[in-house]
Length: 125
Image 1 (cartoon, rainbow, N blue to C red):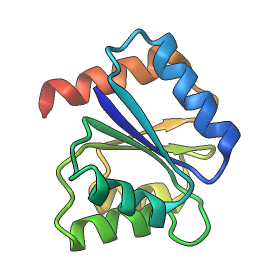
Image 2: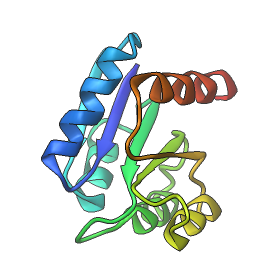
Image 3: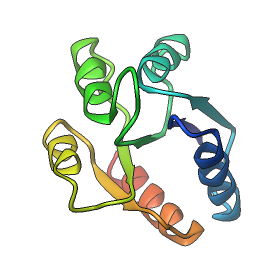
Image 4: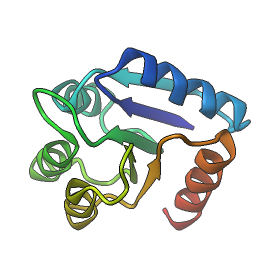
């Protein structure tokens, strides 16, 4: 699997990456982006060849909802996206789901939760 993590916090990107490794998924590559703008650039650079995207909701430059909209506008909306959020009741999470996110993971999360969500999305892709 090739996974893209989009989060403005380097610490959170590391935590998500570690959780993915702990989940014992077959990872070929984990690519990181510090905000939605960098996430779009990564999609273009890697020709949208990701199996899963984990994206923060709140980020500067381009937030999670903006990232979803921009990738759709650029016709890059083929990879399932899981939103990562501290508050699952956040109205932005609802907007993200309306914009094409396939699910969300609330912080704090476990490696098993990420694995289960990733595998469920891989089965439906």
